[in-house]
Image 1: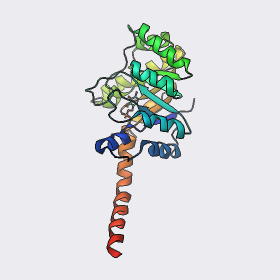
Image 2 (image 1 turned 135 degrees about the vertical axis):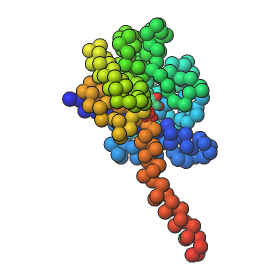
Image 3 (image 1 turned 120 degrees about the horizontal axis):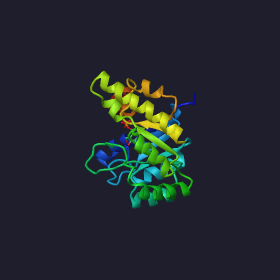
Length: 244
Ligand code: PXP
């Protein structure tokens, strides 16, 4: 079985920073810590509304990340131009709606082959490995191969959010079948969205999946792991001032 890579999405470190327009917490520092923890890549989504990651973050990550940068992006001209200029190792095309809380569904590739094959070719022409974030539907997988993508990232959100066991099994089976079909079509298979320590196991066990991109649960866990120490540090700083 191929080794599984973990890409850590640090968007929500930037979400916290942008909430106060401060310089901290720094997604680049978080990325370096994720690498120390074993991340095989750092994923960020430069959204058109810039609600978390900014252009400068991507540039700094490109300079400082030792593994690889995977830029999630809409197939929008402004972002495509930016990606072609910055040339991250990987780019993942995602659908984007301004009002959404997060990327809500997979990209519609079937029926938009002309537009997407042009974007994929432009990115690939800059040496970028292009994946498409899609639902595990046979028509989308076949269309992804047809437009020249190197990889698909299968949307695991429906599996992660499934209401009960029967529904979860059905969505897991779709991922299993989708991974097999994508592999047969010559695509590298990735997965992501909504994965946690509690639900990642059955997805990580799918042999064809080579990379998982996980963000929200890791950043959320990092906050809980660190808040005790951060409180201690602040209290020590306060007490030090009193003892002066
Ligand atoms: N993969 C893609 C394409 C995404 O858009 C996201 C969310 O930004 C993720 C993976 C990570 O999802 P989560 O934050 O739920 O782990």
